[in-house]
Image (cartoon, rainbow, N blue to C red):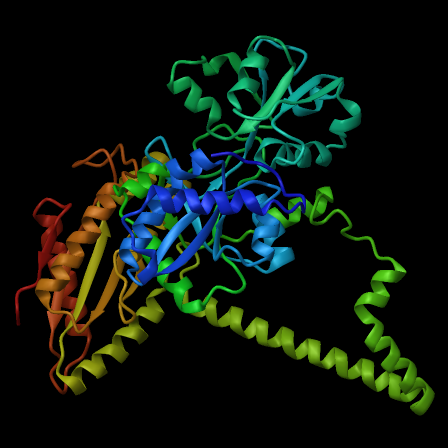
Length: 535
C-alpha cells in the first residue's frame, strides 16, 4: 500500500471516468440498469485498484442488494477535483490525502483499515529512519545532519513527512542541512537497498518494510541500525516516529446517511477470510480512529492544506469578518461604545454555552464507556440489562446473556507485561463487538478480562450460535499467547444463559446462570461454550 502525499488541484476527469468504466466492464454480472450505482474513489493506479479493491466493491454489491458498487482509481491530481464535483460517493485514501479532502470538501471518515501484517491486524503505522549498522559516524538521528538521505517523495506522508517532523523537533532542516536529499518514488525497497549498498548514508520507509524484506530473504535486518527508535505497546515493528491511523474509508458530503450506515455495517461485518479482505491485505475495517495527529503534523510542517497555517492577513480578516465589522461599525455610530461592549459580551456567552454542551457530551461518554477498550462499561451494561429485562417481562420474551472470559489471561500479563495485556483486551473487545449487529444487542467489559453480551428477544439456541461465532472470531484473530495451556493464541470460554423473566424476578438470576455456565466451560477445558440448564 503506497503512502503518497497530498494532492494538487488539477482537473483530470478523464482518468476517473475511465477507471469507473473499467470497473464496470470487469464486473458485468451486476445489472446496473436495475440498481443504483455507487462510486468509491480509491487512491491507486488502475491495475492496483482492480486487484486490491474490486473484490470489496463486489462484496458490497452482494451484501447491499439495492446498489451496485464500483471502484474508481484516482491519483493525487484527480482525487480532489473528482470529490469536489461529487463524482464519487465514498473515498479510500492514505491519511495525508484524507485530511486535505476533509478540510476542503467536507468528507467524513467512517472506518479505519485493519492492515494485516505478519498475520495480525494493525490500525496504526509510522515510519522508520535507518542507516547501516557498520556506520559508526551515525549513532543517533542528529548525526544525519550533513549526510545524504533518501525518501519516497517530498509530499509522501509515510515516505517523508513523518521523518521531516522528527528532524524539525531537533532543529534539522532536511532541505538545507543534508549533503544530499534524494526522492526516488516507489517501491520503498529501493531505498533499503541503496542504504545497504552505501549509495546513500541514511533513509526512511514505512514501518514493517524492513521486517517484510527480511522475511522474504532480501536483507539481513541485523545489517541496519534504527535511528530515533520508539516503543509502542503491541506494535512489533521498528519505529522512529509516532504512530498514525491507517487508511480511512470516508463518505462524501452529498452521500446519504442511510447508505453510509449500510456500507459501514457491511464493512464492519466483513469476514476475515473473505476474498475482499485477502485482496486488500487486511483484516477488514474497524471504527474510525482519531485523525487529529495527521492534521497536527501538516500544521506543524505548514504543508498543503495548511501551508498558510498561523498566517493572518488583512484580506483574511475582511473575508471572514466583514459582516461583523460592518455591524460593529454601525452599532458604534448608533449606540456608542456601550452597545459594542454588549455585543462582545453576548458573543462570549454563546461560546461558553457551546463549550458547556461539548463538555456535557464528553462527560456522558466517559460515564458509559470503558476507558481502556472503548466499549460499554459495567455500569451501562447493568442499566441496559435492567431496561431489556423490564421490556421482556412486559412482552414475555426471552433475554439471553453471554459471559466471556479470556483463558489464562493472568499468564499473558505475567509473561508479556501489562501493555501487551491491555492490547489484548482492546483487541478482544473489538472482535466481540463485531460479532453482534442488532440494534438492541450490547457488548460490554464486565471487569478484568471478562466481557458480557446482552441479547434481547434471543433464545438459548440462537444465543449459543452467537457465542460460537464469538469464540471462532477470537480464534481467527490469532492474538499470540505463548503461555496458554491449550493453544498458541488467545482463546475464550463462554457461558450462555437465557430466561423469560417472571413477573417478580430479577436480572441477577440471569447473570448468575450465565456465570455458572462460564465456570462449567472453564472446568470442561476452556475454549468452548456452555449453555446454562433451564431453571
